[in-house]
Image 1: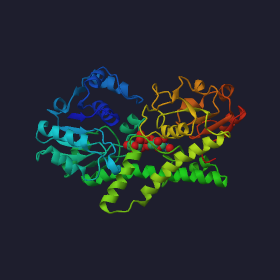
Image 2: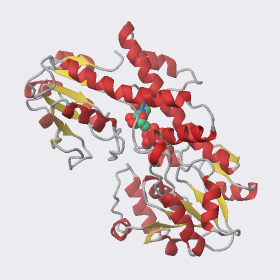
Image 3: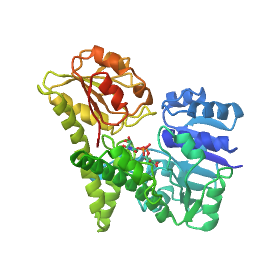
Image 4: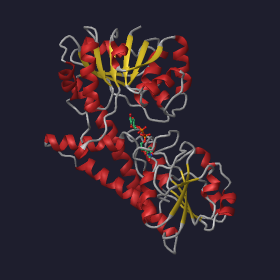
Length: 423
Ligand code: UDX
């Protein structure tokens, strides 16, 4: 078992730390925020991720997981240091490496000789060399071990990954990193650092392209009278296509897909390589949000000005509290600009993330006096709500279901005019 330092306690760092402690390693996670660290040591998490708290509790109880302030204490005796800090989107879509390089520079003063520093943050192709320069330690190896976890299913994704990817300058270092995952069954791809970095971007951007494609197919289904749900089901059985990431929705959002797709397009532009497919996917994603707004506008014949819109769901997808780049917020903002009053409910959001947005503590309370109900996040509990009850509270009889979540026949039986996506 190895001594690991994890720098950064966001979705990736915290999940990696908890899973590594679960696998038997001695793990110290560092964050810069003392209040966050104090809470984490009491198993109070600042993010919502199903099952993660339980794993942190178990890690703390086993003595194999602890949280400290700053990289110095975490890394002074480590054999492997994982960089899991944020890489926000900078100008031109380029990933901002400020935090990664600052953490690397700090580690350079601390880590013992022979340490392997591992990039888990999504960093542009070529970043390992920049991290190595910031470390300024020829006796330290820089490896890349991209993370593919999805928010909402982070633990399952970490414990049962589709693959483990490790890039390193030499096979021995890569194998040492891969061995940290002993106990997890998955194909292991060992490669050079640049290719490992590329695998992460190419994978995320592929998902973005796939989703934009599906959303355009759904728009076409509407025009020609096909049902997009049957269409994607029929497509998904083809193993070359796969059934995941095939649901039409209000557009892809979150902390990764938009940022990584923009960063890859930027990398391509810098390298003089074509990125037409990526550009088209990003354009289609903006159009998709616009299409949802158009459906809501069409549902309120007297115009959105002065209308009351009930919204179910604010987070960028279900089972997370993450609002970063949420299509729901993008759609709501436009509805507000068009003069609508928006009342929203989300099971994981307690403070209004937008000015003028009203929050309701229950989904049905959001429906009071509403002209139209718009479903923007696929929280499963919304599907179980009695739509007759929603109708009784609303003024209008219109539903725009941008996730195809509700039971269409139940909505019609409750007196609604139901509009889904691609149907
Ligand atoms: C993504 C990648 O899936 C993951 O491998 C990577 O490590 C981080 O980025 P995440 O951001 O958690 O994970 O979300 P994901 O589940 O991939 O969904 C991304 C967006 O696409 C969301 O807005 C989601 O609502 C949307 N989506 C996803 C759909 O509209 N339809 C689908 O079928 C799947």
